[in-house]
Length: 583
Image (cartoon, rainbow, N blue to C red):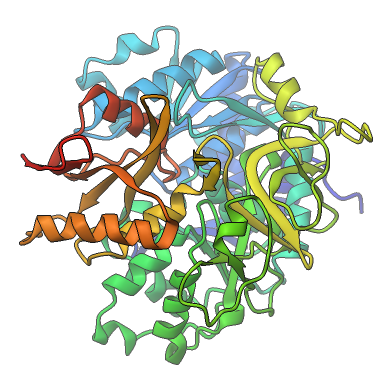
């Protein structure tokens, strides 16, 4: 039998061969099961949506997907593919946050040239009641509730081929207009095959995801890979996870989940929120691959999670640190199933000079621990390149991670220059290429890929490199009232010299009794751990630390707010005044 080359062929085959097999189940509020969606039902819904889109002669057009997490968005995504329409998964606007969420949505609409929006009645009413519909002139709104399933009988196969675009994955857009990464059917089918091998999926695997559909981690590994594997997938809302993180682990226990993924902060949140009674109800022995990616991985968080849940069956081998990006479809590297995570112990001062020198783990000072992000996925090729000379780095040097493989996306939507710069890179000396320039710094050691930070976020003070996440972790460990994952560190130019600024949110409903001591402890800890003199510290109120839709800290946007003086603070210390201002 010819193996399908497009997602349309894949779902059609699943429907024909495993018609009544359950494909997806949504857990309302993270708990209550919806009736499972079978392959036949998904195919019928996709054909109905596809037929409706064909009435609009929409082949090749871009359609927004604006949904809460659930089964409707999966049907809408597949329906777009069934019509040859390019899907554009985007975060839906939120009630009470329209002013904050709509600008990015408008930017995506304009960039993609979207002409159709698939959504729910509730979200459409939210936009209309907010008197925001004028922002989307020319958009044809289609609600899932209004679609007649009998249209499925009118569907015509659009005859898409493997090279046709399936969807646009919009990047975080932390500083500028978001860019649409162009993913073809071939990208997805090829990469899903990679992930099946690299992540150890079996015919009896069971997956659970709460990562949002508009994030590549949630869409590709969370939703598309189970379809590729023909294995059952449970879905939770990200809001259900944030509200009660332990429910994620309860569901892993209840459904004997084998594969589930999350960013580093999620594992930290579970450890901090766990209660004794929860521990007695968890059984994590069936969890084979706990993916950890989408943000910097903290080795301490992994160690704490392992220690906390060891008696519940969670083994070190279960963790699967990984690294990826939308421009590569998803994962560049991932830890093979059944192996333990790798942590490198390095000399901090050498790392700041982009040198990789092992350190004594018993040393109390001058040591940096970096979590490995696993082995390269299948036949993926990676070069570590000096970003200035565009030549390969020595094996003991940090450089930019360049990637080469058919998983690399087609480029950025209608951005020829940026596509050429990012997706068509060649080594200066050997002319090898084309490579994808990831913009991330890292190195390979004993076959393991390590990521040290983003080029654009790198802080250089007096010729020494400092990675902001290292400094942020240091600050957040000074006191329990520091809100984890809600701090930003960056540099500003003061009289021609780069100086360090720290912005850190405090835990809500918490009083700091001795702010003077706290600010002094921060300055001392940063000086001792990183040998940097702090220029300014801002203890901020909740909502200060801006994040992208995927949870990444928008350091440059926060820096702009600092320079503009618009950060809402509890207390401020500056080297200029040597005084503390309380607001």
